[in-house]
Image 1: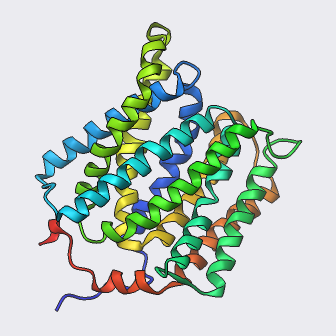
Image 2 (image 1 turned 90 degrees about the vertical axis):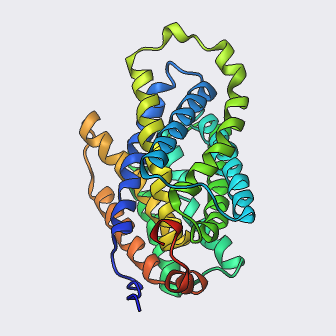
Image 3 (image 1 turned 180 degrees about the vertical axis):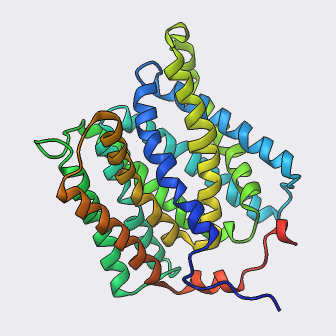
Length: 316
């Protein structure tokens, strides 16, 4: 009888999830730089086409099949439209209209929305200290980002902030709905199916931008931004995220994304000469403690599934 995984042990999946805030934290700066040369939807369409090609190459290299029950296939296809088209439309148009700091902070609300949705659907039951953990994470992020400038939070365009907030809610819904189906299939196959359904919709929405884009005005920064965002932040990032959904569950996976603004602040410190204050250091510590509390305080359906779910197709 195979040994059961440790309930709260730090696994290789946890280690991979720590790469998510690095990829996505850097990606905020990359996107803002690339959007100086690209129209938002033209950039989005190109990077998702590249991400889809990246996952297709990985799929072929590993010899993984896309065969799965029809019900799971349709659910993943619909999730692909939600997470790869609708969410990305809201996110890219939002970040184009506000600051990276505002966008990263607003997206940090997504784990809180995930916890509320998962609890409402009966998929999770959060202990008191789990909610304390989520509160610590949000408070820590507020401390980190509120002292970025002497005047406090950067004042972004309200429309952009609201678009990013809608994107955070959409991503939270994707995370909750996808966590169950990800437990029953290969994360690589599932990611490919979501890309095959979502990317064509995204490309269709990007057609007007493709027509009006000044392609001759795009330099090395823009094209490198497409490559980084498509291959690493989207291709590799979504694969790691979907693996986390299947192994750790939606709520605990979502908490890792809270480190993204901390990485963004650290990057600004290194590249722009901004110095960390005591308040920022306290905020970063609160984020780390909050992640630990939330992971340990999540119990219920997803923990049972973690122990009893069947092995994914690649392991059989």
